[in-house]
Image (cartoon, rainbow, N blue to C red; front, side):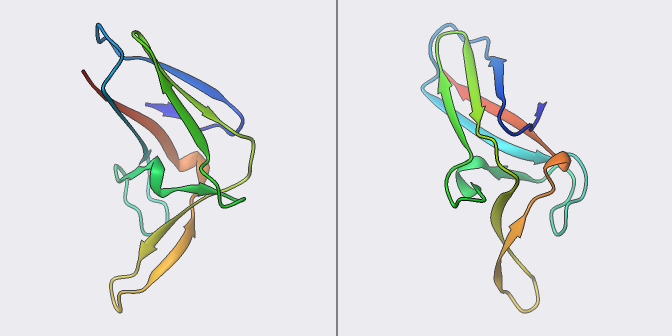
Length: 105
């Protein structure tokens, strides 16, 4: 796990012997953030920045996975309320989330 910082590059050593065939990057809540509980995970593909664009790029090679983030102020995703069930956009509190990477050979 590594903390999210805007305009940053984060490198993870994956320990596989080849470039991963599948990489999944999530934001993992380290504490409660609105309706998200600690340890909730959000796939980064379901989040976007304040310009309505993906907020990071992900690349991998035979030894590492790198996440490159642009400089911006918010990460937004969708969430639902439970009663009644309504979809809403939610701005995440960036200091409450860490990156977590899954890699498969």
